[in-house]
Amino acid sequence: MELRADRLSVRQGVRPVLRDVDCTLPPGSRVLVMGRSGAGKTTLFKALAGLVAPTSGRVLWKGGDVAGMTPADKRVRQAAFGMVFQTDALFDSMTVRGNVLLPLERRRVPREEAEARADEVLRAVGLADAADTLPERLSGGMRKRAGIARALAARPSVLLADDPFAGLDPGTARQVARVLLEVAGSGTLIVAAPDAPPELSLSRWLYLREGQLVYDGPPSPEVETLTDEALA
Ligand SMILES: Nc1ncnc2c1ncn2[C@@H]1O[C@H](COP(=O)(O)OP(=O)(O)OP(=O)(O)O)[C@@H](O)[C@H]1O
Image (tube, rainbow, N blue to C red):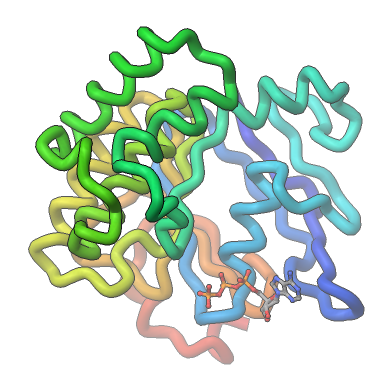
């Protein structure tokens, strides 16, 4: 199930945020999207997930243009994407399990199956014991893992994690990295971060500079050490 950006451009008002981004991500891709704050990483994620419409260009999923999909196909597509947001976006009034169940309820997964799945993902991220806790009582790392569990409960084929290590100490970041790799399984994993996280090695690097994709290739220390000017 290939995901492709084809001359993808997104504007916010008059400001170009993504400019002619081309990339093809085969199933099972392990991708790190790097770039400075404001380079367009989150917008790229949202566009790939179908949450932001391209101003021009296309996002193709299994060869089909997302823009031309019927509402029913759009729902199927949406279900194939899981997003771990920069801020964990958990509802503080619900328990951790309640938060994880929410997307499953929205997808009308039968209650018994939904509960079994929620317990399974909470075990996978090491939060089985915190299932009945309110998110406000969790540490930052636990909240992050709860956000991953929620994204995973719907069994996405593409998992997008936006800056999942921000604010975590190295030990917790390593734990979150291990969980991301383990639970992404054979699906595609795309992680955004300002720099290459030492905790997580991903086989393909994309580097965004002011909305343009200026590097797409294997991990290379040069990408990190080059200044933005040198990458131009
Ligand atoms: N809804 C919006 N309305 C207006 N401007 C926006 C909107 N979303 C993003 N932008 C602008 O687009 C640019 C890219 O933002 P984006 O969040 O994609 O960058 P980023 O690389 O993820 O940055 P960060 O690492 O700080 O999250 C920024 O200048 C931002 O201000």
